[in-house]
Amino acid sequence: MQPLSKEALAQLFTEARSHHAWLNQPVSGETLHTLYDITKWGPTSMNGAPMRIVFVTSHAEKEKLYPTLRGSNAEQVKHAPVTAIIAHDEAFYEALPRLFPSYDARSLFTTDKALADITAFRNGTLQGAYLMIAARALGLDIGPISGFDNAHVDEIFFKGTTWKSNFLCNLGYGNASKLYPRGPRLGFEEVCKII
Image (cartoon, rainbow, N blue to C red; front, side, top):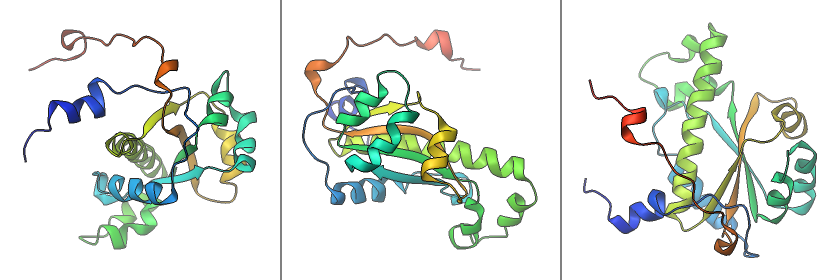
């Protein structure tokens, strides 16, 4: 495998920004299908793939989200072409016989709820990060949101299921003229050790 170009790394990381304002430009269903089809190849424990996604695009469905949001997040969701509810399936292990047929991994989780819950959350979060990078790779901008009431979102969108919300992510084409100055990042020496 060859390293990506500086231009590709800039698009994915070094020059990419989290957007809070959006251009009035729709994101097609075909693009959302492509986004998932790329995202699904990211690695997860035992190929469990616990992430679940609801792509909220309609005005009526977005209105259900507004009461769950904190601060300026409602305005951001209102104007974003798509708001993805990134969730995980607490019963992800039911698909393991198909996704990971090497041995009976399902029984590891059916007998240990704590292990199942943390595995679903951790790997669903990983997949949410893959989705954001894949979105940037497709030329979309992203705006992840954690300022919302998870229990309220779960009641509205996932009642009667084993799905649990993790975070929201607006998707579309960001309005670069509304970006805030970029925040600093911590240096290598502050957060890393080589031992």
